[in-house]
Image (cartoon, rainbow, N blue to C red; front, side, top):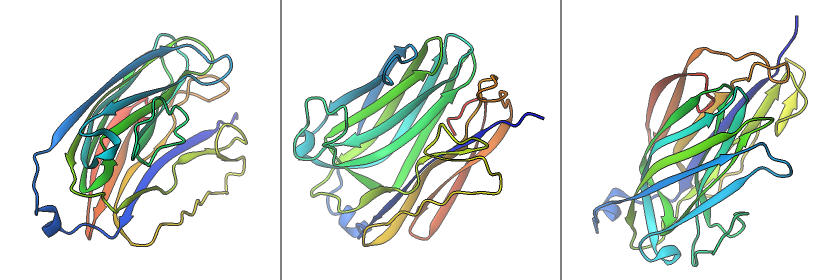
Length: 268
């Protein structure tokens, strides 16, 4: 019996710091604003490096203006024009002090806000809803960028589209809390290639420790998913199942989870 590899992808962020009390947050209440992000690109299989793109947005007084992000909502989609596997990496970042002209390598960013990977193994247009409301606002500035890249791996074209709304408020001072990536990556089982961590031994598992900065945990958000396959001998059969995925967010002592059902896309 032929065995196939299984890939798990996880993006989980821990939000840590000294925290901002509700009393402080209520001292100066400013109505929130919405930054709309719409980006779309069609790519072919890479001949040298994976196609990457960066869209930068300026609100308030740009990178000099501290801001608090209250929510991130919208849709990601990945459309294949052929029955070939495709994938896209999405990263939301911000800069502090000065907005760079084009920091495509993300070497000057002040921090990450969110990231995700979407995958489509079939000739279809797959979409993934993004719905993150933060009980504790995330630190940012008025200079925000969406970095994304990818497409089909072997053949055909793919169109990647992001349609996102960021709800934010200007802040009187810089939010002292930090967003930390606590385990984002891909883990391959049944293969020794193609992922940041891989094993052909079924009994093995992975653990990725992360050192958090001084302070206490305020909330956790992110996604964990298993990859869909493209039906070839390289990646195995298309799974075609409905799974239930739980998203959990922790704020103080409260923990709430919601379930989402979907088919044939590794968008969580």
